[in-house]
Image 1 (cartoon, rainbow, N blue to C red):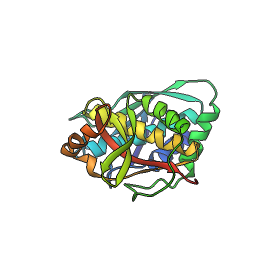
Image 2: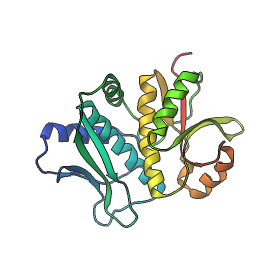
Image 3: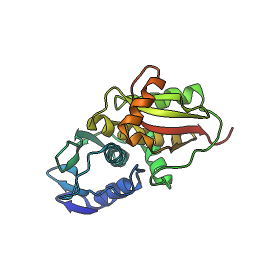
Image 4: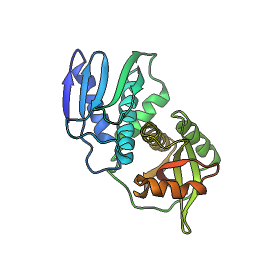
Length: 233
């Protein structure tokens, strides 16, 4: 990862780089350059290494959401002006903005980010007690912040029930927003004492996403499958 810095506090740069590295991902290798210039933080793909497939765009979104979480913890609001665009090396542009002092939830989300380890790639399915109605409502609101929906108890197979982050369409922008949403749900789940993991890599294929669509009520495009459950019953 290459960092280009102009007029940014080196401590802030280090913190944002650390946050991005902490983020979970759906692919083994996501290559990008982190640039701090012109009053913005930009994730840019190196020449010849531009990826705009579904798992890469989801992974970019998760990294961006972790960077945004680190900014919020320092009392800096963030406007994500752009996401991945096919053919463009710019993967995301984050514009820091002045903000009020960080809230308790800002600190809690960052503490969840730091608590790690966040597994790279995907985790094996686990068993546990289901989330409460209140916890489901909170996580549903967390997903809605990125115009996505967290669908509970999706019957992926006859013996596997999962949670799905779903979008209304199936474009690179939707994949990116699903990544941001997933990252926020993972962090928020930890603040509620829940365990949340990424499971099953199959949704990287559009034919699989299309096949699972009828299982969602109401219908949508599933982008990421999660397992969310109580750490202790």
